[in-house]
Length: 180
Image (cartoon, rainbow, N blue to C red; front, side, top):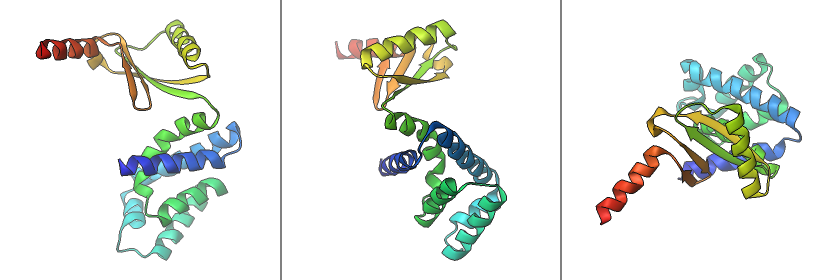
């Protein structure tokens, strides 16, 4: 749980530092490019997270990598901050949470919608309108598919899950039968 709190703080901090949608897209893309490099290059990852490499050397390696990839000042400062605080291991989760933090900054409520099969454009639109009506705010929907839920869908808002899936209904029925 502690890491999730840190991830949220870093994602919210970066979102707060960005002034508009264009900058959000640009900085987000730069951070994702670095993340891809960080994940795919074991030598880079080891150099930046190893306790046997001193902080100055790590900073120099990061600076060289960022300069070589054309990373802008905000993304560079953010990645340097993570390095300085020994939090580069949180970067994948921060990148995943960044769109939600950006939406939160603008008063948009984020939902993760999981369905057994991809939803049609009409279904997505009806769901979006329904959620906007219930929230009385704009919403941002992230769609995922998971064949394990069999049918229906599950909608997650933060830690709250609205489960209208066949799998969820069967689990609830099993629980009720077990209590009776």
